[in-house]
Length: 261
Image (cartoon, rainbow, N blue to C red; front, side, top):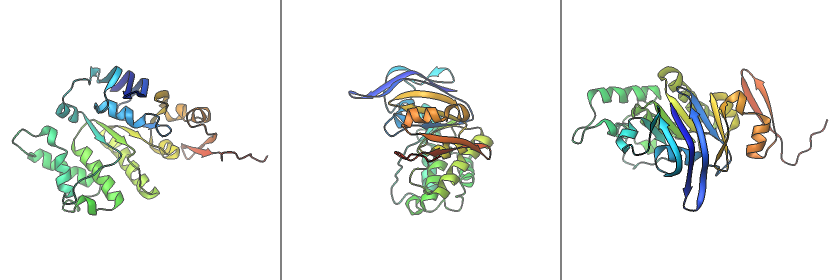
């Protein structure tokens, strides 16, 4: 559905993506994983056109994304950045309405169909009783679900999420990623998310893209990509990886620690 072919990009003289070729599967959760500064966020920005590419192509359903207008792109792909902000006066309902801008006419606002969709997404994220609340007065977990509701209200088939569980405690990390899984399994969404935690990745993702120094080291199903050798190559850290209750668990070895037989 979404594919990058030999994509390279740079911030001035600094290369951040080098010859990245990845195919993202439809109706799956693909986690992009790697050390800080390896190009994970840059890859999402390149897909969205926020970071111009110097080489390669980005295709959606076989058609190049290069040159597509912003409103047209917003009807195809929703993007949730790492940090989201809104004015103190903005309510959750007003925030959700902003998400439908790509469907509005020049002089019109939300249609009856749009408003039905807005109600549905608030129910999906469990915030239907908070529509009149200022977004900045919601709890941390509620705010993150509010931003997810906003990208859902765009009603796109593809959703890009840059560290969607950043700054959340364990309970809300699981709650948000359980919601993402529901979007895939119930609504058929294709979700590409930058994640840092390997155990969250193996618990929730279908496929993984491992990156290092702006390059894709490997990509594919979790069981094929999350291996001790791959993790050591990408992070420089030895790990024990073993199955537990139908998923893989990553147990890093302490740096400089010598195990005792």
